[in-house]
Image 1 (cartoon, rainbow, N blue to C red):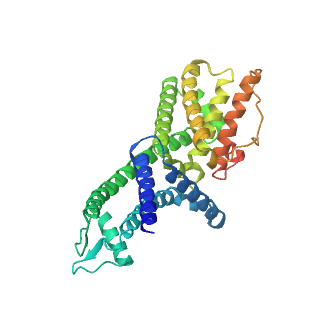
Image 2 (cartoon, rainbow, N blue to C red):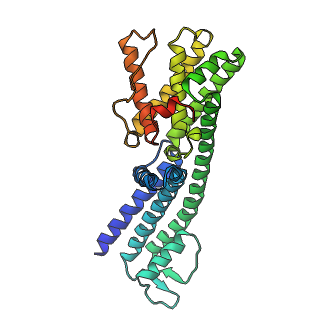
Image 3 (spheres, helix red, strand yellow):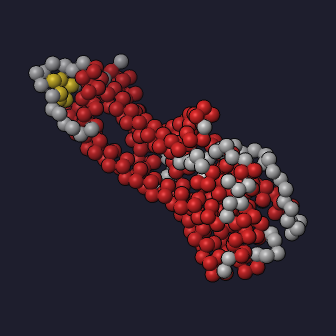
Length: 322
């Protein structure tokens, strides 16, 4: 029985530590545990939206982050507790009495929190080494977690800035297209360049900190998904019209950045997007004679629709002013 507890404890610790360091330090997305906890928490929030309305979305990202942190802490705490429990005589109090289960749980908690109370001590060299190692790890865990969440907050600011920039440019695809073509040329160039930079930065942040995806807003005007949909439709309108002229090359660069973001959505967040047949399929642009172009635009709309449908928006919300 002791061997089984030791084995389970080590496995839990390895899984938690790997997931923690991969998520916080790799810059390549979330680990297996974090990804699945994010999806599960997101589904719980979706259920809450049906009961309490869209205001529940304001707690989406916060809930996901707290659940990830709680899961890491729980796995490490339980894993280390099982390691200590594998040798019932491995932890004693100051008078030499063997610690019971609750006392070993208490000893595990203050070891991880680096409190170092001293009223319980390990009795074997191996447990002394384990205790010292996880006291040091506890310091790394909490400091790295806070650093990670600060980075997520910075990425979230960029996401909201992007959403606000698009919204201020226009409330519908037609209005965005009209404003880009109607503004002074130097101002339009600046706006297109700024949007491209913000989208590229958001794509990088999104890949490094996938939890940013789950930060949603209850208000339509603050939602990135619906504003990205409007911008993508506006770029389509301009590129496949006869008025793109002076901005064609700049808009192609913006389009490329949008494509990279949508490809990342399709590749890494399929389980969170309602991908399927698009519910709107009218391409009334006179130059769309190529079937390949039509297929490419339909694919874009499938991903874009999946993105905003995951927040319970429709095409009517995209094309109508809020």
